[in-house]
Length: 199
Ligand code: VGL
Ligand code: ZN
Image (cartoon, rainbow, N blue to C red; front, top):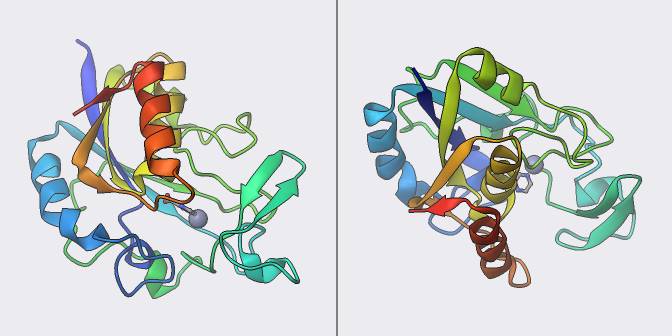
């Protein structure tokens, strides 16, 4: 039988108000995400998990400020404030997130030289995290996504999920966006055009 899974993206302290890369209203969605978790058959979490000095941090690029871009060997990369450093409190899941039933936690962004927005591939769109293989091996063909941020990690995960052949939906009520230079509208459109069901 075809199984389905809920993928909860980056519900971590640093993406919530008070955190290093706070997404407006990021904490408001915790109760909504918890109710999705309660109803889901299988729950998978992602955790942004950067070493100190990660190449996506503006602080690693002299003269650069957060939200500017640099060209990396794999393409253009937005620079961020230092966030979700491995083992730091900011990298922990939000304290009210009911994560205990999760069957898998995928950590991403742990290679210094490359960022990873998507739960499936790093930002070179080539290096897999292993998630697609895990889902296939478990007979999961349908995924539903929620979390932070709508226009970065949620959107890139959803785009890769459809490209990998999974039936994919995003629960927008259970997401919040960063919206950098119109990225929320642009990524919403890209998801819709790619065949992601937006709920
Ligand atoms: C994210 C920027 C940098 C996200 C992660 O979770 O959307 N955004 N790292
Ligand atoms: Zn990150």
